[in-house]
Image 1 (cartoon, rainbow, N blue to C red):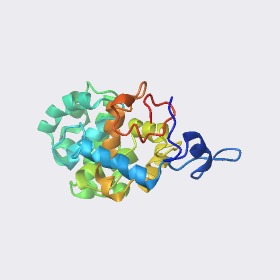
Image 2 (cartoon, helix red, strand yellow):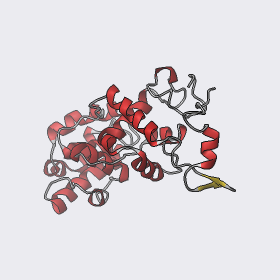
Image 3 (cartoon, rainbow, N blue to C red):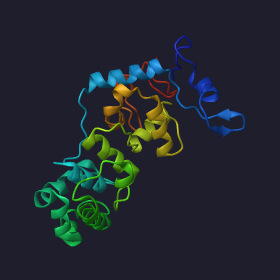
Image 4 (cartoon, helix red, strand yellow):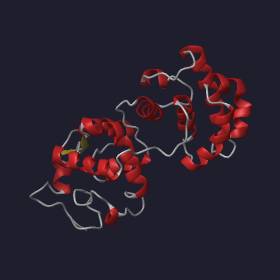
Length: 246
């Protein structure tokens, strides 16, 4: 087990005790971030060099099909969703066509996806809502998106970022794990982690930040045994359990 270099940063223990806001116990504070602004900038600079144009792994053809794919991806793999939606999107790639299909026919396309019955109902309902309330267009505000059936804050953030280029942070299990594990944005809830990431990530990197963090969590900083020896930010990482020297 290695510890951060004293000259470069505080130890993880002292930083956990002395930085940030929010009580975690008697006389202790929940840290907002264990890194200096310069360190955060360097972390995301390296991510940007590693993956200059990161892309999500869900397949889609427009903002509407992206929205549907993200709704279907809850508690399902991207590969599993893609397998089902290839045929679905050939049959219906607009809210009007999807609403015309109806819940039963949508369900027939997505039976291989977990929770498919409820998702078929949501996709049919959100398609009808888009036609009825938004002229068949996907809205470009979080407030309008989360009013749609089956759409939560994370889904809305993904659509706003990918389809419309907005600087949002969609906190999934990977980002939530990284934010807490390495002390980049500790928080008890996804919303808390989201808020802190939005505060510390430099504006110049916000466009792709959520993709970089998801892919880093999916392929390097994995849940059971992080691949620290392959990590491009291992020397900056403040996680006390990392398996490479600082």
